[in-house]
Amino acid sequence: MSAQVEFWHIDAKWALWLAALTGGTLALGACEQPPQSRYTFSAAQEQRGLTAITAAGCGACHVIPGIAWPQGRMGPSLQGFDDIGLIAGALPNSPENLAAFVRNAPQAKRGSTMPSMPLTQEESRDVAAYLYGIDDE
Image 1: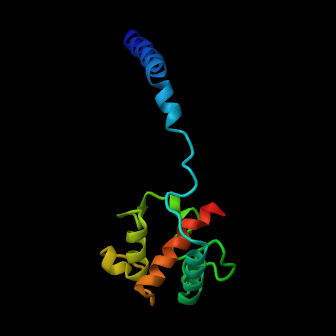
Image 2: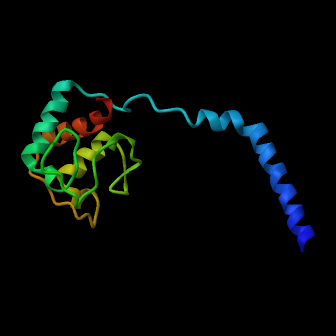
Image 3: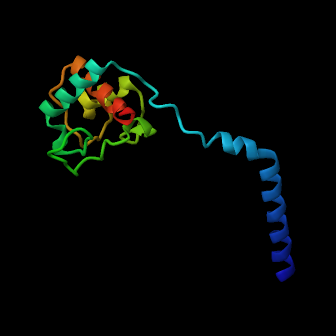
């Protein structure tokens, strides 16, 4: 049995060497940092988003950069929102999906525990603009 283990050990070294030789440059390319935000919005739209977030009381459930108090812990922190893959673990992360989700989460994602929020469509787009702009500051 030890000969078999030794055989696999040698095989594993060969596989690692081959992977490093053939895919090393590809692996390094995958480690590049993304350029700022994938989406850009005007400073005015981001400011309106912060105003809407404050008025709707989003900080009661979420930690949100730019809001000192309250800093709720029931929902996830929204720091680095632009970098998450899926909204609420289900929706592709895009401004349109985020705006729909923050306005009416139960409709956007069945089973969501986040309630519908008192936001207009324009306000929900502004909220999305603010959340995507957080990382750029």
